[in-house]
Length: 191
Length: 248
Image (cartoon, rainbow over all chains, first blue to last red; front, side, top):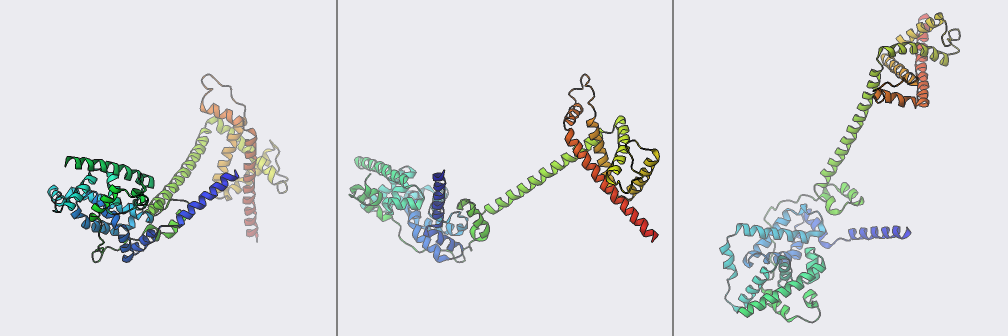
């Protein structure tokens, strides 16, 4: 009985400590809500690569820069709706995914094709092809691989920013890379 | 899986390095954030709008993402209002049921036989109440059970004056007490033999139930007699004071 009570007390203390220790972006979110634009710009610097990677996994490269601005503008306007200030990253990633879906509802198909095939150098074409193959992968692998290979984020960073568990990110990276190698090998074989 | 793909440590993966170099061209290039002039002022977060409610919710263990929701305060107010309404409704339903029960009991005692018993028992009760409460003042008038007509008339005369002096509310309460007292006396009466088809009527069941609560009935009867006697005493005292005042 004593051990159970002690265990409950310890658990309550740990939970209280976790609640008290908040990530730095929580303070920035609170400041931004109070009207501090500099705090929001700091949030933009921290999470722009994440949003860029999420959008790049879905929309043509030429549209990504504008959509990143659009996503952060939306986030700025709706920041008061964020329930948990510590979860700004996952929240802004959701906005980015929704914005990418909206893009395809409004954009015409021909514009996308033109963007993807642009560029003459062999290296750029090879990079475009690799990106296209990554985009053809399942959604869970696609986003994780773009964040790792394009934006240069590590696995732990991806887990922290997207709100996924590290084990999930590790599995996605491993399986995504395996599938990517197979498809790249097939592509090279056909060429 | 190689650690290099996970956190860029350990032996480098050639394929991964090649892809990093190739795809790095698509990486995000820092660009200043362009907020439009006069961007909408932020609506304050729930934790700032209602800090006390937020603090109480946090202490109660409500998760922050629920407590900080803009719907938390209205939802809390709605729950409190619903609870209050439910309590008021339950209380009124209980009181209504009680009043209806009392009315039914009063209505069920309106048969002619019961009315005769009421009159007899009402006379007995007056004598008993006077005897228990005012032995000193009414020594010559103290009536034993079944006393003389003269004494009874005197008691009746005094009582009628006292009754007239009593306020309407007191009179109504006295009538109700008399009626309930008589009903309890009926319950003490032996249960009539149950005829065919009468064994399971509601009245028969109630009568049987009443017979089993003899002690409780007696206690309540005594209490009501005492209350009535006290009221009667008060009314008589007022009467005496009025007369004394008139003489002076």
